[in-house]
Length: 211
Ligand code: MD3
Ligand code: FE
Image (cartoon, rainbow, N blue to C red; front, side, top):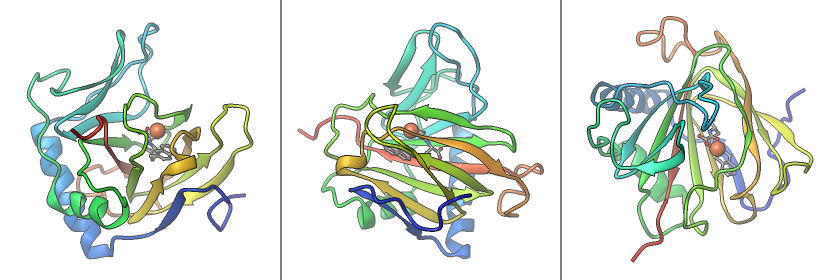
C-alpha cells in the first residue's frame, strides 16, 4: 500500500504544483524539446542492457548513459546537437521551490511507457550536492520509492501524480530512490502524443559548482 503522506525524510518535500492548464502548457514545451532532441534508448554501462525508460534532456548539460558510463554531456548522444534550452515554465518551478540562488544546468526528461520502471539508485554524478534535485511529474501516476543514503536503508513508497513537484535537498539529496511502476490509464494528459499513455518526469539539477 502506498503511503498517503510524505516520508519523514529531512529535506524532502512533495506536493501538487501545476494546475491542469499549466500541465498542458508544460507538456507542449516538453514536446518542443523532444522535437529538437528526440527520446533515445539509454543503455547500462558495461553490459549495454537498455533502460526501459526513454530519455532526452534540455539545458546546457544533459545526463547520458551508454556503454562507457554515466555522465553529463553538452550534446545529444545520437544527433550530436546541443540540448535545447530549458523552457521558462520549467525554470520558473526551480526558482520558486529550489531555494538555491543559481539556475539548474540540466533537465533530464524521462518517458515511462506503461511497464517501464527505474531501479533503486543514487543521483551522484553531479559535483554540487548543496543544490537540491527538483522533480516534476506529467501523465500517469507512478509508485515512487524513497530510501536513505545507504542502499540497505528502509524504503517507503508514495504515489506521484501529474502536476506534482518533489524537492530532494539536504539529507535527502543522496537518498536511494526509484520508480517501481506506472499506473496505466490514470491520466489522459499524454494521449495525443503517446496513445498508450505513460508518464513523463522532469528532473532539474545543478551539475557544477557556481563560479
Ligand atoms: C535525487 N527519476 O532521473 S524523480 C532520475 O521519476 C530519477 O523519473 C525518477 O530518479 C523519475 O534520476 C525520480 C527525481 C528524484 C527523485 C528522488 C530523489 C531525484 C532524487 C531523491 C534523492 C536524490
Ligand atoms: Fe534519480
